[in-house]
Structure formats: structure tokens, C-alpha cells
Length: 185
Image (cartoon, rainbow, N blue to C red; front, side):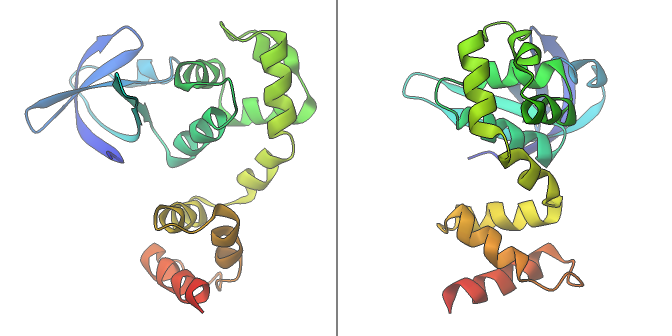
């Protein structure tokens, strides 16, 4: 699975960029609001969500781990696929979307092409309250949680272990080691 890519933007193709990495061009779909910042000829680092289906494989790119995590949260909702989640991230920042969900602003979500009132209400219902918890989690904590989940631990157990780690320890690898010790005992 591809986690991130660093390379030179060679083309813009629809809602995607062609990222040249070591002589290989990766077509990476990105939110429309960040596409203008990815100028042709410049180097870019994108955090990748690698979506694999039986008939296709698509890469979705984000400029931060927070965006990628938010994207993953959106596609975890039944009826919200990667294309719709990308469109949601195209209409506003994570904070804009978080505020709309927390305030129950269905109109904000229905402004996204392809999202009707029913889907917007479902998104609000499933995410309300959950996004505040995610917002309080630092990027470092999220990296540790993601690593633990990748190793097979549940998200809730991983988050609990991370909460118990001394805040003075800032090295991510050390935080992962400590959390693994807690979870294995």
C-alpha cells in the first residue's frame, strides 16, 4: 500500500495531478481546493490513500495527514465513497466541514454535487461528536494510532494507549514503542 509520494507535478488532468516519482508517473486525485497550489514543475509531497477494488486502483492525495485521516473517516460512512469524500473536501477546509457537521448544517453538505439531503443527514448523524474527538488528537498522536491500527490493534485500544503516554515524550517512534508495551501487557 502506498502511504505517501514525493515528486514533481508534471500535469493537471481533470481533478488529478500527475506526480512523477523516479521516472514513474502516478495519477493522484486531489481535492479541487488544493489543486491550484500544486503547480506544474514544482515538487510536492502528498499523503496517499490507496483505494483498491477488484476492477480498479485509484490514488487519492492530500497535503496533510489530517486531510487523509478525515477522508478515511468520511469513506467509513455507508454510502459515501472516495469520489464523494473528495468532493466534500473540495468545498471547504476540514474545520469548515467539522463546524458544519457539529452545527447540523445539512445545507453546507448538500452544496456538494452528488450529495442529497438524505446523505447529508446521514453524514451529520454519524459524525456529530466524533469529529471533535478527532480534532483534539494531535498529528503525532494520530500517527501513533494509525501505526498501531496497522499492526492489528483496534482504534479504541490504540487511542487509549496513546492517552496514557507521557506528553513530554515527543518522538513518534518512541511513542509507538511505549504504546506497544502497554498494549502487550
